[in-house]
Length: 291
Image 1 (cartoon, rainbow, N blue to C red):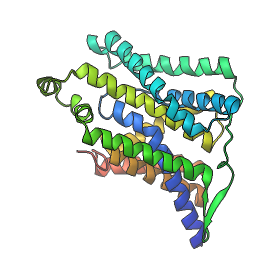
Image 2 (image 1 turned 45 degrees about the vertical axis):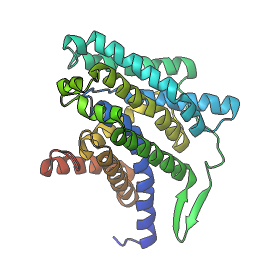
Image 3 (image 1 turned 90 degrees about the vertical axis):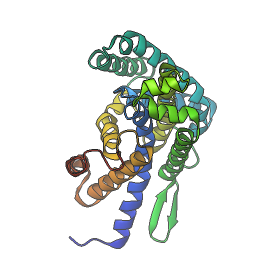
Image 4 (image 1 turned 45 degrees about the horizontal axis):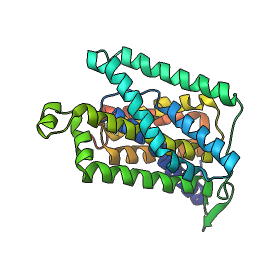
């Protein structure tokens, strides 16, 4: 099959833009699962909640979805604090987080989804913004603004998280909390408080990811299920606890999906992407940048 250069470059660019969005959705999982060992399968449901809040405020007040997500960060952070506190007192404190904790997040997933259905119905919702529709063309490569703007916002989110984790005492404590809680206590840090902060940050990222999702595509309450397997795959592929690894893995997955969808059809994209995950884990079980 002959492959034209312009089609190939456009597919790669589309994959990079898509991968940045995947990275934004996976950022919170990299913190909760990669650093705290909390299997929060309800994470995509919180992303959809962020999408609907962005939709509601955008449609009723005309506020840009990305600005809405920034305004919603404190609310989502406090929501994450509350969820972790319930999880800790009910399961982690009793050593029952493995199976019952997983059931807890399953319940959160369905409660959030059903609540959104009751409030908004099952119709697809979308937002309005000046950059949804136009494209930036450089040579023969197209940059759809509805993908480019979320890409830049996702990269800014990742940069902020990486700076916080690597340059602050709390951030370094988050990286250490799942490895050696006793050493953390000797540093005068409360492991439970650190975990609560980290999980709050994890859920706060859903506000941004949700706004980016509804910019890219219309959403309905159950669309988050499509991302459950993908976000955990990216987290594992990049290396548990590695934010740069997560970004690289998300970009790689986006490019592979885009190339596959362009040249072989979209139905093959998920199979090829997860095949890449299996091959990577077969030859490098720790992931791309895992230790």
